[in-house]
Amino acid sequence: MRRSKFLVGVVGGASAVVALGGLGTFLLSGTESTSRLDEYSTASVDGHRALAANVVAGRTESKFHPLPWVGDKLSGVICPSGLKAVAGAGITCTGKTSDGGTVEIPVQVTKADGKSVT
Image (cartoon, rainbow, N blue to C red; front, side, top):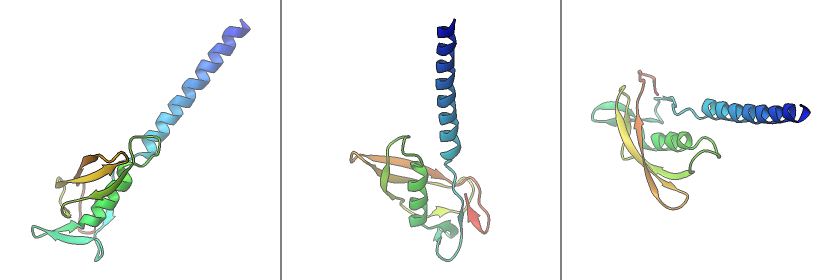
């Protein structure tokens, strides 16, 4: 009897640790980022206000790998142009993995107004 209680406790404790780790990973690994449109971050793409390519690349690199225990670390993210400040607009950026490979990262605007882009 004592042995089965111990086993139930160990299994229950391990399950709780895994569940909390999964929840923490989910909460900390959001992929959205909101950036202000100001004189330092704003560019023009096809006559529209846009988030400058270097700002998009930096945000993408930091959001693509937010936690060290999830996925490959990226570096050298490059975006081909600025990202229009229009909901639904998108571009594909390119990054390098730690083993020297490349990965394409689609980036899309979910929300935009006159002052910021998400």
